[in-house]
Structure formats: C-alpha cells, structure tokens
Length: 121
Image (cartoon, rainbow, N blue to C red; front, top):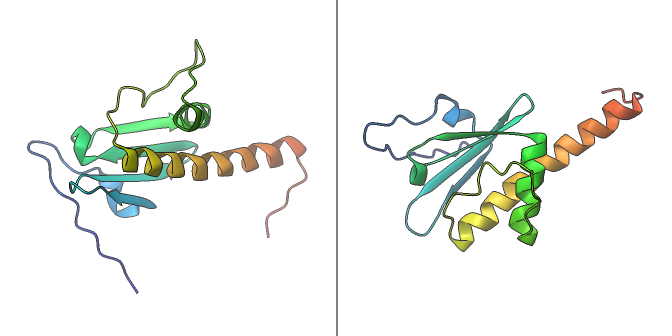
C-alpha cells in the first residue's frame, strides 16, 4: 500500500527536491507540514512553516538538538541550528522523535566503526 502525501507550496519557494524521499512526515493541527530524512551523514529537515528552507545537521548537531529539546539545557559553545525555530508542542515532539531516531542510528554506526569488527549481512 502506497501513502500519497501532498505537500503545500509556499509562495516563491519550491518544495525540496528530496521531499519524495523523506522518511519522516508531520502535519500539525494548522496544516503546517514538516519533512525529514538523511543524506549520508546529515539529517535534512524542512517545513512549510519556514518556507521549505532546509536545515542540514551533522550527527553532533543532531545529538545536541535532541538533548536541548528533551532537557531544555544549552551547552555554551555548542551549535544549535534549530534553536531559532518557533515550534508548538506537537512540532517539538515530532522534531525530538526525528532527531532521536537519527541520532540512535548515528551512534550505532560510530560504535561499530570504533569497534571495527562489524560485518553487515
């Protein structure tokens, strides 16, 4: 069964080219849509609410943002690319879920690369 999602256009701004490959989708109670996926070692996040601008977070930034969203704590000197986004509660929960899922994968990859004995398959 295929799921067909129609993303809303923003005036003068195009939906990201990777939108049809997005692995996470969210629409809040006001119809504002968000999408997210990974490309290599980056998390890509975009949304109608921000004119479909794209945030590209590396694993360190994704972990920092995940921690900030869940605890509210900010570490001086740490980069928080999403800190200026105005998110309602449902968007915060979605963003946290997305970041947690990706950071879990990033941490597993890092662990297996460190141990050096992981063999796929």
